[in-house]
Length: 524
Image (cartoon, rainbow, N blue to C red; front, side, top):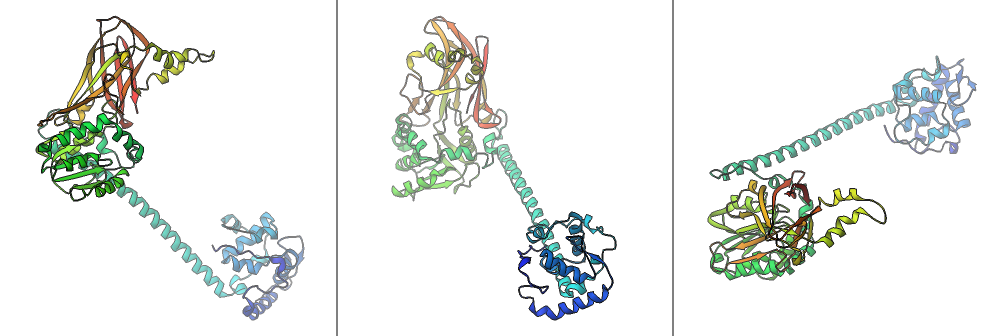
C-alpha cells in the first residue's frame, strides 16, 4: 500500500478533488450523475452520524461538508481496489472512527484485515456501487499494478532472505573447511611423531573468537612495558646479535612480531630475509619502524594469524618468538609457534628460545595471607567467609618478596621447543618441596626459566624466579585457604595439573594437590 497523504479535509470547500485534480472535473460530474441515477429513492446512512440521506453522492458530500472526510480522495490516496474500498467502509461503520482519525493514518491501513469484508450494515448502498465507475478505470489499473509491485517486492525480500541464509551456510562451510585443513595439516605434519595427535584449540579458533586477545596487543602501552623489560629484551638481543654465525644468510620467521624488535635484531645479525607475522594492529606501527630503520628490503611484515596467513617462502631456517605468558603457558601462544614449526621449519632448523622449564616453591607470608584471605573472616564486624571461595581460586600475578620463599624450587616441567607437541602442553606432575624454614606455608609460587643454548657459541638464559631481577611476567602465586605448618627439612609432597580452559583456550586451569588439600585455580 502507498503511504497515506496528510490531507486537511476542513480546508476543502467543495467535493472537487484537490491538488492537481482540476482536469478530472468532467469525469467527476459524470460519476455523480451516474450515482444519482442509480441511487434514486435509496436511504443511505452516514458513516459518521445517524443521519439518513437519499443517495450515495449526497452521503459522500455530507461526509465531506459535515465531517471533513472526502471518501473519493481517501480511495485515491490509499490506492484502494474494490476489496480495499469495501473493507474501509465496513471498518468505519464497525469501529465508528472519526474523520480526524482517518486524516492522520500512517503505515499499515487499519482495515487491512479480512474481517472487514463482512458488511457492517445489511444491504449497505455504499457497498453496492461500482468502484471502477466511481473513481475511473485508471485508478483500479494503478491499484492492480501496485499489487503486482507489492508481489514483486515480496519476492525480492524472499530472495534477499534466501541469499542471507545461503551466505551464512557458506560461512559455516568455510569455517568447517578451515578446521578440516588444520586437521589435515596436523595429520601430515605429525606423521612419525610419538604421542597423541592434537591440532590445537588455538588453531581452531575463529578470528572473531580470538579478537579480544589480539586487540589487547594493539595498544602501545603493553609493547612499551615489554621493551622496557631489560631482562627480556636484552636476553633476546644478546642471543641474536651475539651469535651472528647462527643467523648469517638465514631465513628467519618472527611469530607475533609486535613492534618488530626481534626481526630487526635478526636483520642486524645478518639474516638474509626476515618475515614477521602479527595479527594485532601494532603491526602497522612496526611497518613504519622497519622503514625508519631502512630494513624494508630485509624484513617483510604480514598482518594475520600464523595459522591463517600464507608466507612468501616454503621453509624457514630459524623461528624466533617471544611467546611466554604468565606461568609460561598463559595465552597459549606457544601453540602458534609449534604450528609454525611444524608447517615452515626446514630440516635442521631451530626454534628459539629452544628450551624452558616451570618451577614451583613454597611461600610463607602470613601477613599477606591475613590481608587477602583471613581478611574476610571479619569485615567491619560482618562475617564474609563465603568470599574466600571466590578469592582463593584466582591465581595472583605479582612480584614476590624473595625472603618469603621457604623451600627449594622443584622443576615440574621442561619443554624442548623443537620437539614438544601441543598435547604435551597440558600435563600432570608430582613434586616435593624441600622446606627451608619452620613456619606456615601460605601459598605456592610458580615461575619459569628460558634458555637459548642450541647450536650456538654464546648461550643465554634468564629466569623469572623471585630471587632474580624482576620482569613484566612477575610470578604466579597460588594462595592456600588454610596455611599448612611446616618444619625446616620437611618435604611437602604435591601434584599439579595444568590444562587449558575449554571455554577459553588461552586461559589456564591449574589444580594443586598439597598435603591432602586440593584446589583448582584459574589464570585468565
